[in-house]
Image 1 (tube, rainbow, N blue to C red):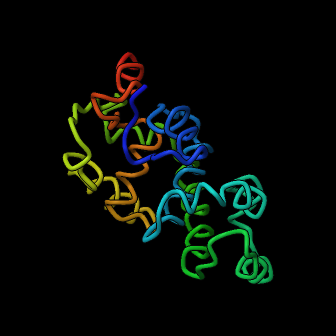
Image 2: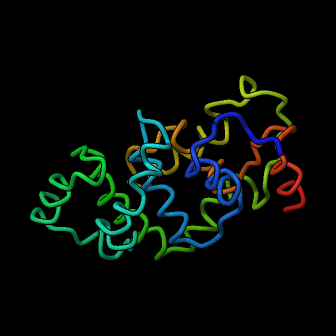
Length: 188
């Protein structure tokens, strides 16, 4: 069974590749979870975030945006002292401001509809032969990043947005040789 080379042989990474990466996500809170994790990943490897995912889930109240938006200075200090997560002050503060921006956006519509509008509600099926062809950003992720920033989100540059699109199945960036490409190509 052939997979995309980026997942290597690490069992956690392989499971993520085989079961989650590129599977379309339409649940607003799950999209928020992925966005929070992607912002934490900025400048780091995704496996680092995956290994800390359960710690993030516990530390950030199961990625509940209502709770995160209400974090106090005491809670932020607790997070900064939590060795189980990525302890980056600006990223932790971004989680709070992004939760507030998420809630504000939800008052005016559904976050899922908002995110999927950038691909016109459709999965973009790419046909990459090798990893060197896969972009780190696109015009769509540029537009998404710009719009998110205008709505008060932070740590959401184009590269973070494209990684988010890949993770949540807005784009199918599995290589053509990967068994998941064909399976996910059936998703409309």
